[in-house]
Amino acid sequence: MPGLAIGLILFFLLTLISCGSRQDQQKVQNQVAAIKTQAASVIESLPTLPSIRKKVHQVTTMSDPFQQPRKLFSKNGNQADRSVKKQPLEAYTLNSLKMVGTIKKNGQYWALILAPDGNIYAITIGQYIGQQSGQVTAISIDKIKIDEKFVTKSERKRREIQLLLRQS
Image (cartoon, rainbow, N blue to C red; front, side):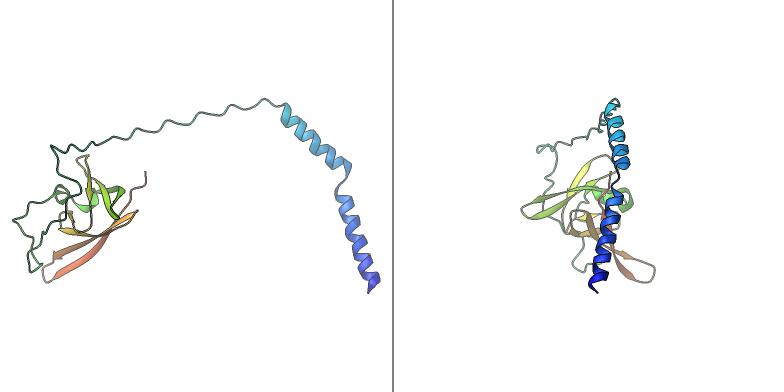
């Protein structure tokens, strides 16, 4: 058994010694020297990023984007309360609205929604969005959950829709 162990050790030593020949080392040194003599390549400048259009909130001419949610449905919860004026985002289909960001104020998330009119609106849980009286039920950093109530020919239905953060 000791002879076998010594034989294996000698075999591995000879294998390691044969791997490091001077010719291989010389080849590597020649390649490094050739690379060092090459002219440095020009690094391209970074592309310019498109500018982001700012929307300044004019307190005197616009409503507060952090206003409390309003009640849209009547007490029985089946029909929209027509005495309440609809908000701008209720004029659009959910497919035409895009979530472009979030704001966190006092521990509460507000979603930033880009409407087809080019304006960005801030909405929070409980507010209504879309033409089917969808109510925002949850907001996270990358999505909004919306509960829509609608009536088919034979029954009342509900569905949950997610509006995902738009990746630029």
